[in-house]
Each structure stands twice: as structure tokens, then as C-alpha cells.
Image (cartoon, rainbow, N blue to C red; front, side, top):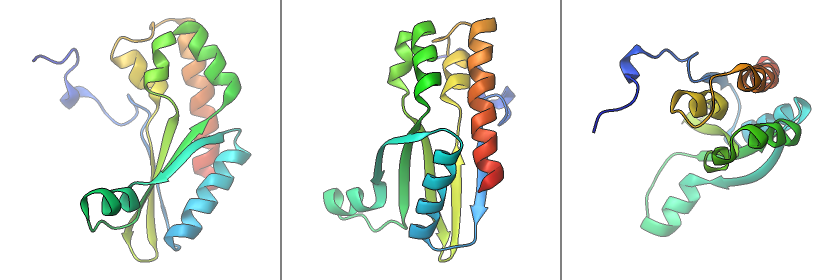
Length: 145
């Protein structure tokens, strides 16, 4: 199978990758991330511990790994007006994993940029405005982590 894009030619800005390191406990990092994203205009539509689920289902012993499914309702509504398929990528996930005790990595990538890269969304002015809006909100959140 040939990919429509060469992943080797992409840099993290092409798909809106953001990362931060928090020097705190895992539960504290989850709560802090939830609050910071709420302050930036995101609600958390769904959340779950991947590490707990895997331990329960397949007896995996994984370091703490947690997903916050964040969503800004106004931007989501605009995005769906432009691209109904976007729901396949929703919500915007923010992941918190423990690199070591007391050190947590917070990770996010832009579903809006990914949708454009894979051809789900048009590469036009309306979509660029959506990309820019979500990018500003995520940037605000990461600046406050």
C-alpha cells in the first residue's frame, strides 16, 4: 500500500504535534491538564485510563497512560459543517503518560491538520480558519501547562 503522503517529509508542525513535560504525579498531571484545557475552552467529552483497561483485559502491566478526549463545541460544530467525516477522528485527544514517577508527558496532535493531510477536509480558507482557531486554543493550553 502506498501512502498518500510520505511521513518522512512531515515535521511535527504539519500535524500539530504538541508536547509538554510536567514534574508532578500522574493523577495530579491529569487533573492539571483537564483544568488547563477547560480554561482554554475545551470540554472533556470522554476520558479513560488505557493502562487500567489493558491490565483488566489482557493483564498488561503498563505504566500509567491516560486519554482525555477534549472538544471545543463551537469549533467542532464549524468543523462538522465543513467535513462530516471528521467525527471519525473526534474528540481531540490529549494523552498523559508517566515517563517515570513524578514526570508526566502530555501529548496532543491536531485532528484538524490530520484531516487535511489525509484528504478528509478541504485545503481551503474555511478549513484553514478552523485549523488556526483550534491551534490557538491548544497553544494557549500548552502555554499554561
